[in-house]
Image 1 (tube, rainbow, N blue to C red):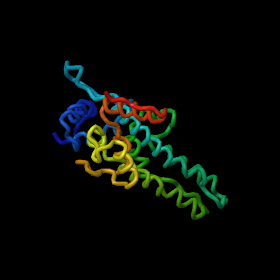
Image 2 (image 1 turned 30 degrees about the vertical axis):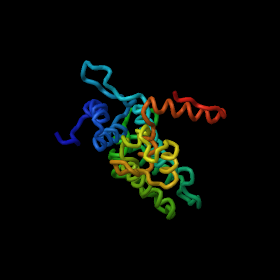
Image 3 (image 1 turned 90 degrees about the horizontal axis):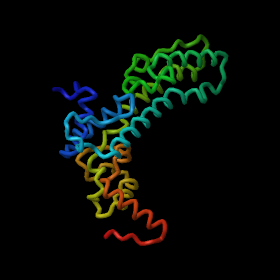
Image 4 (image 1 turned 90 degrees about the vertical axis):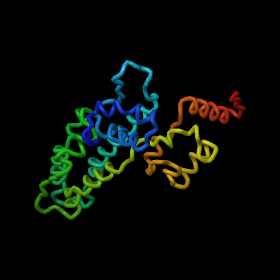
Amino acid sequence: MDKQGLETDELRALLYPCQALEHAKAFAYVTKRLANEVAAHIEEFNPTRFRHLRCEGRVIQQLNAVRGSMRGKIIAGLFEPLNDFCRLKCDVHEKSIAAYLEGVKRTEIWPLQHQHHKSNKDVTDSAGFLNWKCTTPKGACYTCQKQLSGANVRKTREDLMNYWEGLCLDCMDISQPKTGDSDTDYWLHNGLGQWSLGCDLSHGRNTWYFSFMGRPEVMTKFQQEQLARRKGGRYDSD
């Protein structure tokens, strides 16, 4: 089957196998699509009777965090232009704002009270998003015309398409720090901007940011060490 034809439940079922088999590209692909295509809380799916085969909770947490972050970008992209729509306050700026809101209504983000029923893909692939249309009032100034052109909507969609590359298994596994120290790993990536340094998957900052989590036992030890440092104490790992 072509991977583009995978249904949501199939993607959810593939989440654990891709991680367990350490298939970096497949895991990234599945997680990217889930964050983009699931409307409600993202959960994995185990079609077998072996209930112990599942991803750690933090994987699901991060997927939902990405989904929420992307939704925030969509809302900001559509509504931030209203904050300073027409500085000149031209004679028809109010009509221009009304026309802009009519354009927003054609996207799947509207009405806002029901937007949580739609996935990020539902919104950015909607007819109102892909074919943004606004009626420009006669006499509209250059600024109003630019706001109504849909340039910000097209940019928002492009940014969302390139927001991240999916979760990176290498960045997730800080039990094997590339520098020998998990703290150095974190600051090396953050300081140099080499987000996929040493990873099988080539990716940018957002993938690194949401992926840097580590295995449960390693993260517990890491958090205990951090707490001991803040208290000025000594952490004994034995």
